[in-house]
Image 1: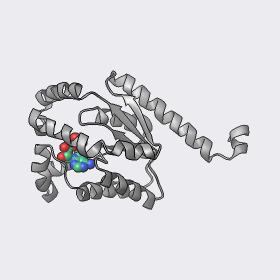
Image 2 (image 1 turned 90 degrees about the horizontal axis):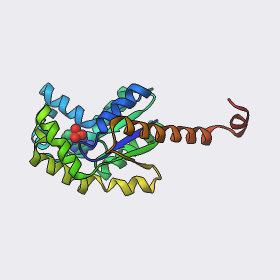
Image 3 (image 1 turned 180 degrees about the vertical axis):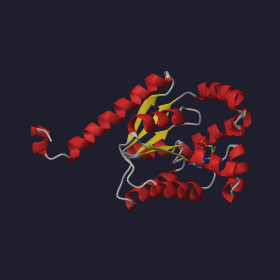
Length: 206
Ligand code: AMP
């Protein structure tokens, strides 16, 4: 099962993706984590993206698409992936569709965590104080949020048109959000099983 965890920065995508990894064995692919790891390692890629990330801008589509493809190949045979912070542009979404298709897979669903901008600003102030992430400072965060609305939100109609989009209230407690997501995924799995199982197995059991 391949799922995109969708939402603005600080909506709780990473937290929920980690829970799905623990509960369902899905592999979390967070492009933000990959880019931060590249910076920590001091690689050329890390140096190239540092300034862009600290400003709150998006790195190029080519870079993140290559990172995702590398991970898809490194995790062949995985039970599924949760894409966290990717895709963030329509170009990236199209590339993801193509990459999965080339590997005989597809995206099963997109879970959107709906959170108010004002709540995000409050959350990020707290995270900045606790973790000190450079791009969580108020100026960078405003740019990240603006980039989300301008470049990432257009993915919503893209996925809605594919019938893959489900919305979840991201303002609720972490456990409540997790339960809502679990319900969405269980319904999705039941639907897929129904669609792929022959009629005699559906009636008489497996
Ligand atoms: P995140 O931890 O997902 O908020 O990502 C932190 C930063 O990494 C973003 O503000 C971007 O600069 C960069 N980044 C992460 N994922 C992407 C992506 N899919 N496309 C472009 N830039 C990204």
